[in-house]
Length: 60
Image (tube, rainbow, N blue to C red; front, top):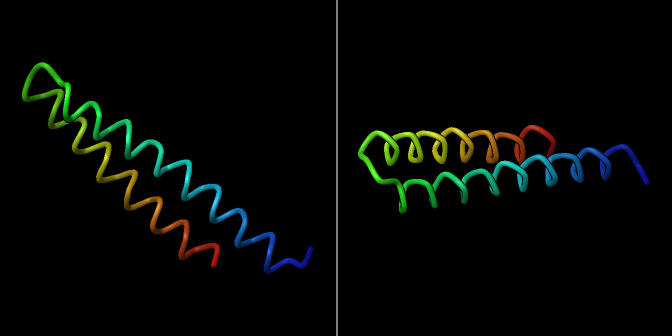
């Protein structure tokens, strides 16, 4: 494997890990019993989505 392929694989792994956190945040947003829990789920989903997209671009 070359260094470029390893870097892109790392970006893919980090991006997919944070994408899984986005899904968990979205589930919390959907099933949260109160407004504060739904807001926390939205916040987690948005921050994790930003990090996931950044990881894809950073390790490209």
